[in-house]
Length: 92
Image 1 (tube, one colour):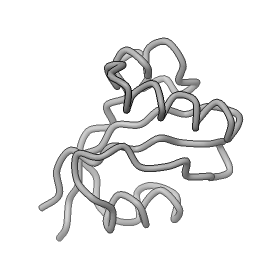
Image 2 (tube, rainbow, N blue to C red):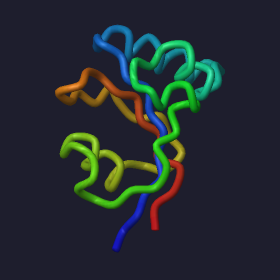
Image 3 (cartoon, rainbow, N blue to C red):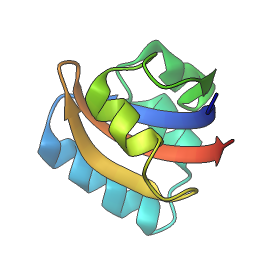
């Protein structure tokens, strides 16, 4: 079965998500951005979600994690929780 590892940043607005994405693309460390901005408890761990299989996350999140480019900041991805920036760190 396919497995992926990812980290993410969860914020309330698309504007905040886009602003953070630009900061990360301009050199801000993803883990620092997650610790300082993510409303998800994983933020305190740099946004790390560990390894998971398809179906363990909401559909919109899964679609990006299992189809998106590796080691690239993807998003904003809107879910019922808010807006995510996602970085897929591995997929097997």
